Image (cartoon, rainbow, N blue to C red; front, top):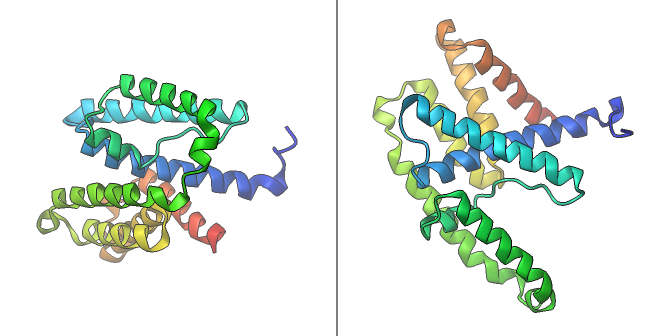
Length: 201
């Protein structure tokens, strides 16, 4: 309860924003790769349920005092190997439990050994860009997409990329005076995105 103080509010907001944006970016990318979010209202409901499960895992993990239990972009490698359901997650968890008894062996593996899989994950995610049709986008959406694609690898942060995208979209729409495209939700997310850069700056 001592963490719920005014002095720690910036830290709490930073964690909230970072986790929210990282989760949105990760689940959208991995879900698209796995073809989990397809078609109209069903797509929105599937994404909503996935976000709720991720949020519940994050809160439960923190209450148990472990590292943040959330989705990771490395899940794309599991999707590429054929993983599509919750059964994949259960077996992955069981394999992780088994590593507790082989910790000295895994500690002997040098950290650079994981770099090839990260490159492979990056390639898999980059392949999704082929689904973007810039010819059919308005200038605001195209600009937002460009900054998201550019800043994610340059800043090593999904959060920074998405924050820049929301800010760019809002600024361009304001410059075009297309007020009808800027609902309350978009403005709130743009404001949160601005806070990301203020806090990180």
